[in-house]
Image (cartoon, rainbow, N blue to C red):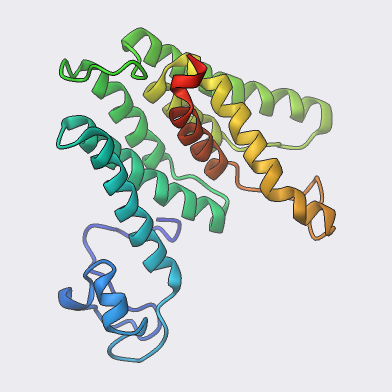
Length: 227
């Protein structure tokens, strides 16, 4: 997506030799091991990133199934999980969050509140969901606005604002401050070693999207202890 290539109309191909990858060489997890992490045609190494994405997705699907069984909520969270994984890897590498991914999360986050079969305390009603979207976007937007006015530097991107809006739609306005807090703590803990080694400074650019998503997962995990 950052390279503006279609993920629908062109089949998978090797980035080294440009040859198309056959379906039997494109089976998640299995094909990577079967081919020893190399392209069948040119024998060049396939980046480990592809295996990691498939592995994390599989684990997340198993977790959602173990929590919610065979249900529509499991399907909703599978969508949430796979979009989140895509956002994390794109943001880590390119420092952007495509609008289309954020909009999918927003749409599904709002759509699920109309499903009468979902009866879970951590799921918001329509008012909480819409207010969560507005609150999430508004907080990041105001942070960007005032920081720019003071420092003349863009502290964050609007992609982060849209992502927090999506998380607000998923978990309600009451989740926003907890997600921001957990995201900030996680980011600090992970970045602190590089700050101490002076390989990174406080002015270094970091992708905040992954930390927002980790913050939302932490919020879900601690929900029963928070409320």
